[in-house]
Length: 257
Image (cartoon, rainbow, N blue to C red; front, side, top):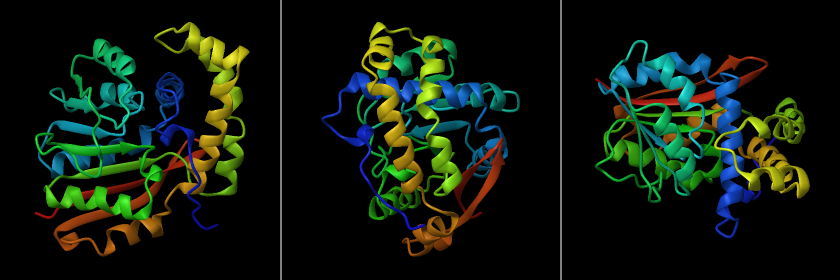
């Protein structure tokens, strides 16, 4: 199945911020409750160790992704860990709640473009469920910017471009309906636009299916790094690992010693 770059509501500038935030809140809640990224903890530790840093610069953070749960696990071995959340469309209420629950989190309240990260943001760059938002030219810019700034980068996608993944996405509206009452901070608008005017479950369904269709395969991610300027100065680890009934695809790029 070839990669198809259809549109996602979440990417559209005209899409209301509050609805986008409801969607990213759902993804954050789901990834933390299911411990979706448990199997990639060794990859993150390797990225931090090889880049000799205790700081994660998370790009395309949405609502914070699975970082709240990951943070508690990583701190067992890295007690001085720091995490900075960023996004081109920052979900400020979610960022503030995350920081309130874990004081080693910080966030940037202005848009941060993953293709051109401010040079003052130093650390292991991470992306969770966000590389598929970028067309190949832009995805290469993200990776090239990491090389140009001597920054390590770790990218994770918790879906793949396959029939089972797409079928799993068909159940996402049910997941939204079942989890919405437990998502914090509580917002009456989230209830209204989930149960009475069901925009949230419908856009999560569409964006979920499109995310699968957009996801880069291991072979395609290898292709993305193949001709980057200075790619030979980096060690690239590109693979996928089992995560419950699904898989997580990942790319880890670190400067050669």
